[in-house]
Length: 409
Image 1 (cartoon, helix red, strand yellow):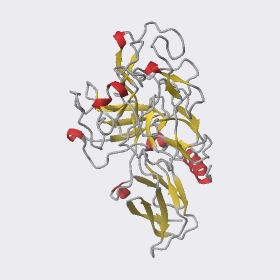
Image 2 (tube, one colour):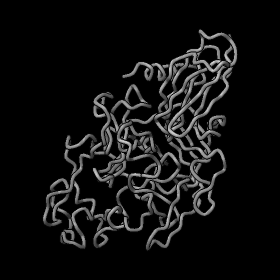
Image 3 (cartoon, helix red, strand yellow):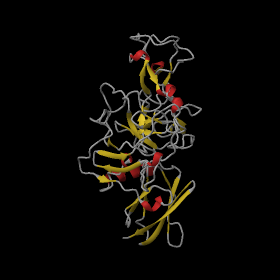
Image 4 (cartoon, one colour):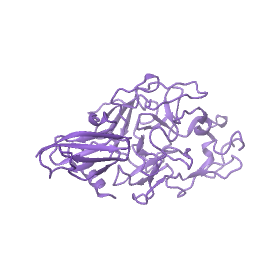
């Protein structure tokens, strides 16, 4: 792995006052301008608060990108006034896996809800053959592949293609959300090998459509408690989630649609989920984390009260540096003034082609160009520079910003 990634992680963990800024804190698309989305509702994430053990995400559930219309769907997106609580210490579940529930199963980085593949309806209401929301409800999705539930909760059952560039297969996808067990969710592209080598590839699901002519058995081969409807044009294979089976090793991901691997944000490795798409960019089952979670689900993370967490512990509000925001860049720098190490930390959800460089007051570069990755803190060593004023310049595709940096010794 690149040395600078490991060094940045070690500094992040060991440096006093910096240990709390981790991807779970910094990967959110924070609305710092009061921008509104659908129907004038404040968009994206309004506030991020964090403690040693948890992150609290305040959001409306409405994104900044244009949503709607929703054909044949009478519902409309409304302000959900959510406060989600995400653990910062995710733990693998060594017991019985917990199924992702109906309703939200996690949260995208812009505060929009993640739903699993089910649409809450089953054949003859028996709970055996559960309808695939992507097939049954798909005609009501908007151009961003989302729609509102009966309670007005806008959500995506599959790849949120307006949240990130799902056609960019040249770079590792950014973190685009977190599941309620606390593990990150990435877009469709990751390193070919779990050790961070092998180039970039689209992460392939290990699920496939079953080779069946009648719905009489379950995916594990056992007899179904009740048979499903005939496989025909009206209800083709894939109409129910039980039409899919998991084949270990068939793809890149495990039964939860994730894997343990190195990512740009976690150079030492982490368990991570990926959204899955096919060669035409359409969703591939199970689409998002699921059908079960990899990790332990903290009490209250799912169920009727989830999304309405009460902050009852000391927390710090995460502040996005405003200087670069005016230039369309979500980048945090600290400390400033600085005497030894200047940390440059792009927020989650930003472009992953950013580069940074320091210049003196004559416009001359005084250090190497450093590549920046979303949520990955990068260090400039300024201990060898003369005390004075410098300028940090960050550039990316179509964006550029400069911030004054004061070096003291």
